[in-house]
Amino acid sequence: MDARIREALRYLGYGDNACDEATRALVDSCFEELAVANKAHTYAIFELDLDEDAPEGERVTLQGGVQIKSRSLRRHLDGCRKAAVLGATLGSAVDYMLLRYGKTDVRRQVVLHACAAAQIEAYCDEIEAQIRAEAASEGLHTVSRFSPGYGDWGIEYQPMLLRLIQAEKRIGLTAT
Image 1: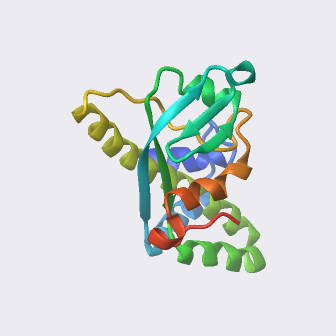
Image 2 (image 1 turned 120 degrees about the vertical axis):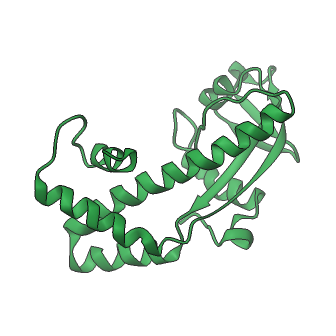
C-alpha cells in the first residue's frame, strides 16, 4: 500500500487496521481529486541563538531578532546553529474543494482532508530531504521537523513565521 494512503488512513483513525472497500475507494478517489493541487513551498535558513540565560532556557531567537518562547522547541534545537523555516501549500484549489464538500458531502470532506494532510506531509518530506542535502553539503547535520503546535510551541507563531519567509508573497500562503 502506498505510504500516502497508509498515512491518510492513519489520520482517519484506522491505524494498522484495514478499512472496508468503500472507504478505500473513497480514499483513492480523493487522492485522484488532489491532482488539482498546485504544490508550492518556500523556506529560508536563519542563524539561531538558543538563549541559555532565559528562564528555564526556553527562548529561541532567529536571525533578525524574532523571538520564540517554547521549552519544547528550545530542547529540540539544542546544539543547532541554524534553523530552516518552511512554508508549504497544496494551493487554493484544494481549500475550495474542502469548503465545497463541507457543504455538500461531509464524509468526502473528512476523507479529502486526511488525504490532503498526507499529501502535504509527503511534499514536506521531499523538501526536508533537499534541506538535509543542503545542510550536509555545508558539513551540518539536521534534526527532524518541528512545527508550531508541537509540545508547548503555540500555533500563534505561525503568522509571524510565514511573514518571516514572505510566504504570502512567494506562494500565496497565509495562516487563517
